Image (cartoon, rainbow, N blue to C red; front, side, top):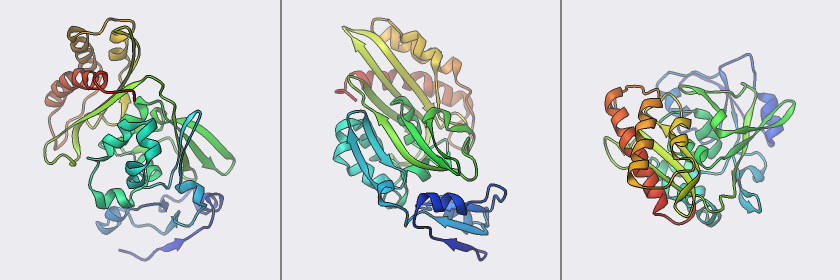
Length: 287
């Protein structure tokens, strides 16, 4: 690795000021699980890294309130996995984390870093989008709120400015929502997925009152599938309805090919797994 400056600010506001919107070689570093690999391989050669490890402790915390969960951006994925508050208010997140990469990565990787990295194969983004989660983003002019579904602009790309940082994640109270996440891997259970599908559904007397369907890995970014959601709206739940939602998802999604599968293969996976994820959600308890 080439030499670089390491800054260690004591506050989030100081960290924001140390970022340079005109220099792409100045980056923040949280857990560094992805960034360090890029540096070791020579893909990225920073002039300055702004470490977030010493900023205020509130950004490492996880807390529940009347309006849902507040998760600091520096909370590790392992802390999320083992949090009683997360397990109570959003157990689909807990279940998802058990097969997200491996324990070593989860112990180091942070919530904010994982989202800002914008890898379309990550497991958390589709789940958080399905739960209607939002972000607090900090910049030089203050904070702004951003829906997780609006964060990603393309393949490994976000709408964040170069001098903005994710400060916190907010998962709203889920009420009677039932949620599930399924992924298809070509290797081990914790491998990068060829397809990820997250759903969150509410029903009343066997009729769908609301639904969110999100796909990832097979697309260039985690994204909702509104046409598939519309198939479910106001309808009685049965196997034929779930199959129609899967068909709509397969027709709607802009599928990409990669080393984990061809576009046609992933499209058929999506067709099948949307129905499976919806059934899995309906068979769980709330959340």
